[in-house]
Image (tube, rainbow, N blue to C red; front, side, top):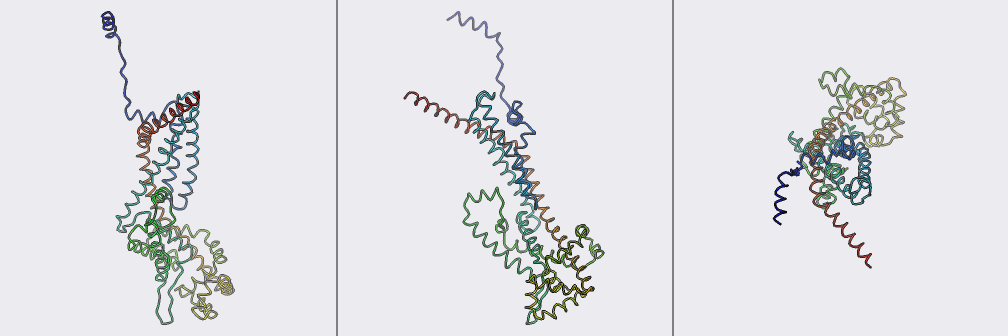
Length: 425
């Protein structure tokens, strides 16, 4: 024993042990996302795992956002499938000598959390935070609530519900055109929709709330969650603005629009004026009832003769209301008016302005939504950029290492014990 101790004392001072170096957090993250032996874990291929998050971020953009979101799921799913299959073939040793279902399950859980659920939640959170900043402009409404109202206004405009003019009732009372529009949009449609949505939100399950957080709703959820007086004030102000701009465009020449010093409106006007003649001819064929309604509601003196000719045939308010609801009757009336060359020229010029106005106002409303969409999209990208790597690190070091790996090992050990018992039988 004494001889062994003396030999140990003689040898050990000459042996240099290499200390085990602990990996820093930065090195651990690099190992996760830049593993030199795993091309699927390295950029740029790793970026395909986030294409669905890019889709989630741009989904806030009007018109094309949701379509882009759906399309960007394709590369993400292809990447996730390839990565999970690769880990299955690599196996636990990582040398492709023995496939491992356990490795595939572990990678599937990692990708589900690190490339789908948590990054998408981060994007949605970033969008919501960015959207809440619009409350400070005095409206007290988030960007999402405003988007819902602009979508409603655009839908009403596309359905030609901004074509109403002043009417005189039998008792002589004058109802202004905007009051008629406001009554239809707000009283008849918006308020019932808000009340219905609020009632549904009261009984909404937690599962439905989670789905709504990640998905999109066609209902005015953000508006219903806001104060009704703020929502009403916002949509009334924007509807009045649209109505006034519509009247300005329909009753003014380009020179008169230049004098307003509204550069945005003028830019949209010049763009809409391109090929307006062809679109005007198409509008006459497709929407004669709309054209008749616009003529009857027009305050322009030049159109008084046309109004008189219509009134000579449809001599009561009730008959004229029925006329603008029947395509066949409106088409016949419009043809009759345009048989006169002078009338035809006036109508064609008026319809051209109507068509220019329609295109201008559609793009004007969509432009407002576009700005809100850009704000939310920027918030989503900032959140994704800040949290993507920390999410990878959290899922790998905390969830996978502390819970998933031990759990899978226990399951594997249990299976081996059961298999051993069966062999004994």
